[in-house]
Image (cartoon, rainbow, N blue to C red; front, side, top):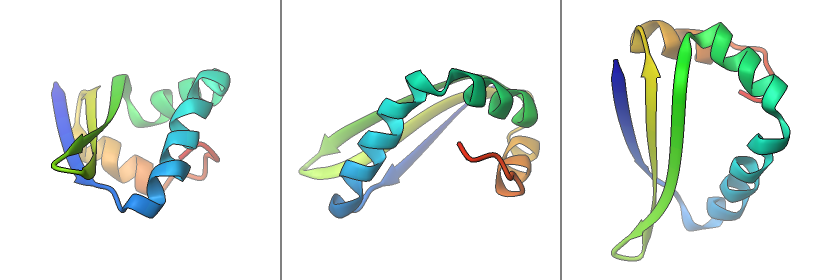
Length: 80
């Protein structure tokens, strides 16, 4: 099932978020571990501006959003 999350991002958090998003391509093994642990099949992140406000859009494919969320919140993985 596909799920979309939209969240406003504080302007001062944008550089840190951009850095984290850019780091994902060099952390593929960690990312795969995270996906396996949470049951994630695919994820897409978009950082956009709407009327000047930064917005993070996350599109994720998981079997159960509740299980994936609980797993993420309890995760000890550094990438999470």
